[in-house]
Image (cartoon, rainbow, N blue to C red; front, side, top):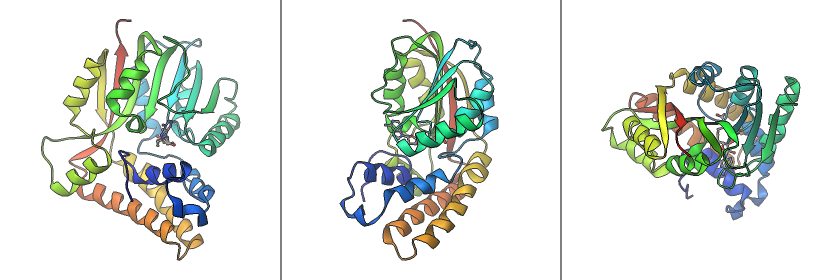
Length: 276
Ligand code: SAH
């Protein structure tokens, strides 16, 4: 199995399924993999507290503001954002099932008049030039690449507009080979925090704030719900090799995190566009 440049094999698998790259998958109903992720509130590390902390650094928002949440998934963080801002939010995700759930979540919270999910790809966004006040993206920019995303999305932001992204990063200059090799294989852009901040500045933004997500964003908000979903999944697909491999990789990922969490984690980067 090749895993391209995606940080999370789990997404690599379903995106390959979506694009029919896995030819042997036909006996396996990809809707059920969607169901797997649909059963988890988040599709990456994070928490409502962290979303609000990142939002606290952003000071330009009004009820006229236009916000995009890129790679929004089912919208866990988008709904938090929506409940603490008053503008319009567009969530974009490649995965139609996630967007259906996103829109159902917005309706449940009575936010549907100003929070809308659309299916689309982050490398082909349809916003106008300098249309957005804020670009949000939690645990998703790696799909286009951190530097490329910062550069390409910048055109959609007004001068003085903000970008807030969470992304994995190394906490130290050196780290054990096992964890280094694992991440560099999935995510070759993985870098230290100062290097990421330098990339932000180079891309035409002022770095406003940077903070490391607490470990509970992984353990409580990401891995723990996955464990419940995995148990249901394995029961349902007992004997299915693809399902087993899928869960095996998830468990390996969690194990590596427990072992090496002092060396890496998720970091929120908040920055402001300067110039045209
Ligand atoms: N922001 C959410 C989801 C993060 S997981 C959260 O924090 O919970 C990464 C998301 O990016 C997935 O929902 C995946 O479907 C989406 N994604 C992957 N490639 C994409 C692309 N090219 N364009 C838009 N979304 C993409």
